[in-house]
Image (cartoon, rainbow, N blue to C red):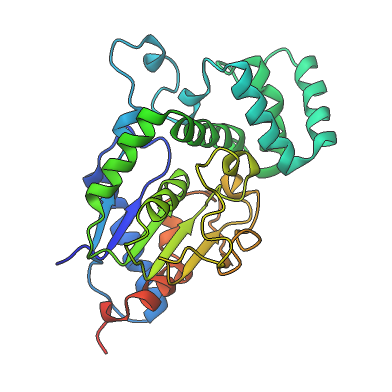
Length: 294
């Protein structure tokens, strides 16, 4: 069966592989399709564009074996001044300077908080956790650091983009990007104007963040026309409590985007919870009506 749907994953997947991720994505998307169609649907023709191995540290890297090395927290070590400035700007963009200043004062007065996290990041962690719940700060900062590295490390970006291009064949009509994957998927669209897509589906996307957009090669691609010219429709789905998507809707940037909202419960950023929603299934079915029997 041709792979007419390709998913582009988000951060912290370097301990997995494309087959494992497909095992998570495919049943969740199938549920979303069935909720939308209100009847049984076969296994979706889904492939996974996998690039996370590029972020995997070697066995000799001591920092990769300490603490929560397999999770988002491992992304929060060894921060430099320019990176800290970008991350702080991204947080104040969401929370406002007054709230962030209060978190800074609290962090300075704190004796113990977030073991293993650089003290400079404590205000960010505090303010995001207060806003979005426990561990939101770790998720948010891990996301932004990996997005930032993807956009600023030209060699890594070229390799990641090549891996995505290799997976997306002309038979692909629906491109799904979750988290960092929405930025990577957008870059595929920008770099391949000759590939016409019926649907770009973004889930839990940070594309509305100024910090992210300011570092993209051409964040204005498609804005003049409302959508990239090689995308027939773009649906952006977010849980409004998802810290990664906390900058808001994409419609202010691309007027042709359809923004929709879901409730993912206590795992607001979880990709399976996004994919299993009726809204995700309906977006895919609108682009690929032939997936279900008439």
